[in-house]
Length: 192
Image 1: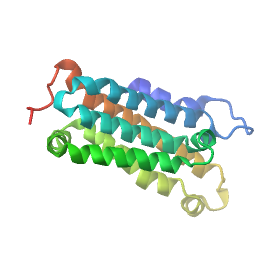
Image 2 (image 1 turned 90 degrees about the vertical axis):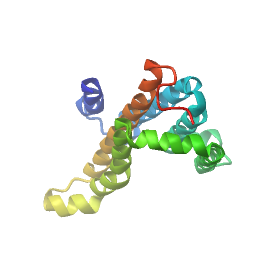
Image 3 (image 1 turned 120 degrees about the vertical axis):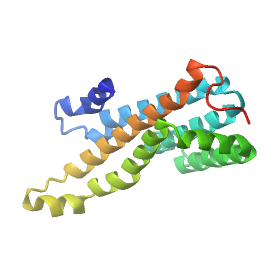
Image 4 (image 1 turned 30 degrees about the horizontal axis):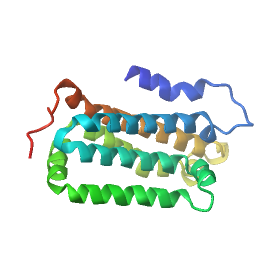
């Protein structure tokens, strides 16, 4: 946790260069790295998840979808005639179909996840992305708060750091869901 806090604050200690905006450089790379590591962790744990293998892969693909959304511009350049949104929709459709095909295991996993502390980190990440980053990343909020001292660099910096914190929470959630499988082979919950 301490190392993660230092990692999240690392871009703030970098020298201020006006030529490279913070959201498009170090913070963006760190967000992508945290999401990629979270997805890799879920995919690496999936073979050890027994009957929940498909659920872990589906969560891994959800994390990949978040990664594609984060680096959408680079993905758009690679798949030029298409857009990254098409890839995200395909990943979400595959995940939904997988969870529907494995309804029983999905329901057991939801029951397990509702009692697991890692779900708190995942929920906190969603709240950071969809609530706090929308409010604290808006120029309207900062204009009303700071008045004449408003600086237009503040909203994107706040949005970038809140998204970075959310990506760190996603990594902590992935670690939390994978730890029971590392400690004992199928130790999550009783098999359906």
